[in-house]
Image (cartoon, rainbow, N blue to C red; front, side):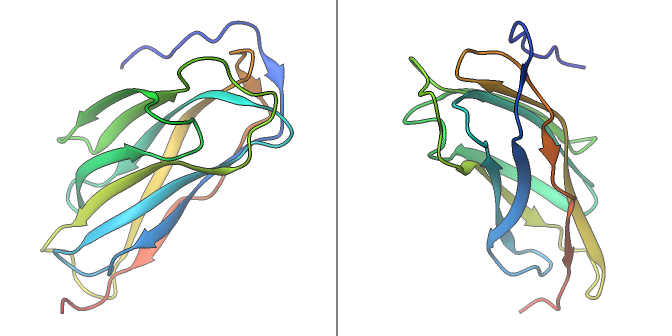
Length: 157
């Protein structure tokens, strides 16, 4: 288990982190883009950390790219275990954080649906172990995690 960042004293906030299908066909062998979105409430955000859980029998994780929420060229950590399907992602803003941050994409995750997944099957991507740091690099409490993203598989093209 990789260590989590220590963001110092906690702060209270009402942020929501959730997944949303951005593009792609949910069909065997097809690549999907899934956005990790954050609605931070009335605070600035300096960093976000989460674990992504996917079944390695259902998905191949292809990569992650940072979204615009943490500014250009954020610091990134990506630790992926292909055998378990669990990946740790951490992104942090370079330089000072604003007092408020407009919600939006933290990252876009690229996955490929495994060729052996049968049509009419539901596949799931889920986030866990969320840490969000406010503009003062304090760990936010009261963070709401959206439900897992459940996708119905269609027949391959």
